[in-house]
Length: 235
Image (tube, rainbow, N blue to C red):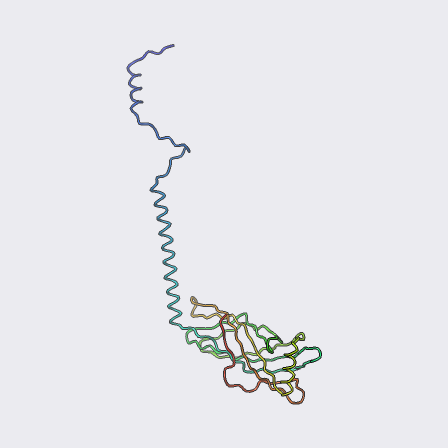
């Protein structure tokens, strides 16, 4: 069947021909404008710039605060070192004994408190560790000075080298032996609730001359020392 060609049909065809073509999207979704991507990148860059600026400003404030506070290193002094049940076996190359120490600590800071944790102490003869112990955490207020005692018991005999043992025997016969006490401390410098700095330090107390009794040679006491005998090194 053939439909008649009328004037209305011609008008419909001409109207359809005059309409602009519809855009074709291969994915079936409208594509985003290039300006949208540029805006997103610009926003990300601004956010990163703000974060970096805040970090730099905060770091400068912290640095200025530490310059104003001027944190000072704590002071350590070995006030007492007593030795008991000390014995040396030259034939077996071993040494044993118990050590009791008293440490005097001072916080020289006028604006900062000090907190000490992970506190370990050891007694050495030359390079050989004779005994070791852990000390409970403690704190020092501004300009505070305190002392604490610790017992270092030798649970097992310590072997010495031949030259160390010979040197120790000669000193013991003369009535004195020089020991060392080493401490490893984790210290936090604190100013208020928002500003703190944690540092690890090694405390070395050298040339601790212990005078032994002339009779038994098994007990000894640290000779009087007025000067500070410990050196602090940050690690």
